[in-house]
Amino acid sequence: MVPGGQDGGMQATEPSEVLYIGGRAGVGKTTVAAEASHLLSAAGVSHALTEGDNLDQAYPQPWRNGTPLAERNLAVMWRNYPEAGYRCLIYTNTVSVLEMTDLNAALGGEVRAVGVLNTAAPILPLTGPMSGASCCRSSQ
Image 1: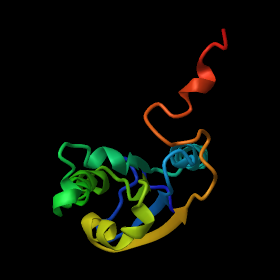
Image 2: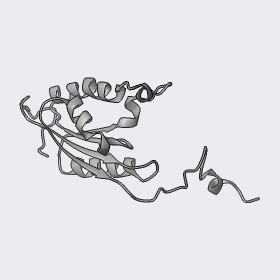
Image 3: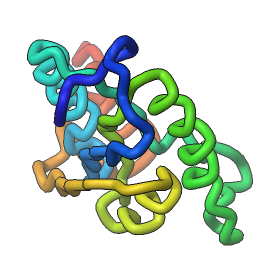
Image 4: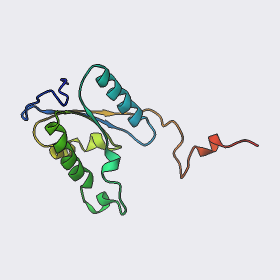
């Protein structure tokens, strides 16, 4: 990844570079993405960080009827970043590493992408609503 920044004078022909971070709920995708963002920032690398789950949160779930809402929203949103001088993206989503082809297509143009599947054990057991919350209750 090469520093570009808002003043970097990036050319439209430069490829987008993407780090996709996937994994089941609770494994630390957001934590890993935040740390990657911190490291890139410390190195002066301009980048964006997007939580893919936020791109299609709706009821009823659009993906259940085949509507690729996350990809459509990513396409519209990402279009603004290169115009502002950004070309590096950190993208987290549970299944992002399985959908890299569609996500890359949504970004448009040339895309260099790496997918990382976080396989760490969840921090809290995820077996139902409010799972793990009992650890925070008083034992009295």
